[in-house]
Image (cartoon, rainbow, N blue to C red; front, side, top):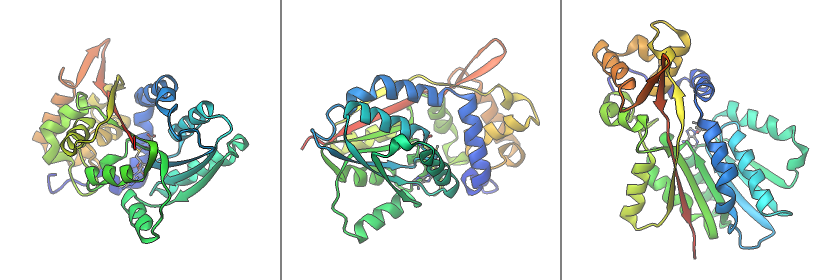
Length: 294
Ligand SMILES: C[S@@+](CC[C@H](N)C(=O)[O-])C[C@H]1O[C@@H](n2cnc3c(N)ncnc32)[C@H](O)[C@@H]1O
């Protein structure tokens, strides 16, 4: 990362605003919802092997929108089941929003929530220190592995918590997305700090292949309207650019050549398609599912 640039995630409030705008400008949650309602039920069918009590761990749950949809599919597949749900989320704002949502839904009384305001590695430490032997039936990490120091080690730790017939679900941007193209070109100048890294499902698949871990993978088509990024001085465009580059105030702080190069690549056919005056960025997601067969 160029030394003058600061990582977006150091400013939690701006990061949350940028993430919210990204959700509004992209089909991210829609495409995840399609996956959750159409494909996840089949994936969850064999989870738990007939148990009446399932342990779930959500890592980097945000405000819980996606988690709650997955939990409701789990309940539909396994009616009558009780759920113990560990939520691992370091942002107090996000955790608070998640708790508020839960408090407004009395129908979730079959779920016992445990709120862990901590990072994935703090959770790992806590789990090891307390010598907890509980195993999990379903663990998910949706769009969060960018924020851990060692994504491979994080996947391995959570995989080690799976019970027989348990599943670990990972969603990240796909190795075929515009994100991957952007990172292949500007990884060193933009992100790849201790706080945030440019990891795709392509990287996780290579890691799992190297360890001989078998998994299933899926590609979810998704788009993001980045047209505003090309209007100089547009506030929302600048916020989106911060999200895309993961750099705080990218427009104002990036060296001119870097900014010009990024802007050119963002509208290049490798990253986006242009139609009807709009620039539509390839936000395809990748899904990886690891099964604990034994
Ligand atoms: C892009 S958001 C995804 C939120 C949610 N899973 C979704 O898809 O809507 C990433 C989340 O990971 C959380 N996070 C950041 N660093 C983390 C870490 N080291 N361990 C666990 N979660 C982390 C952030 O606070 C944020 O809520």
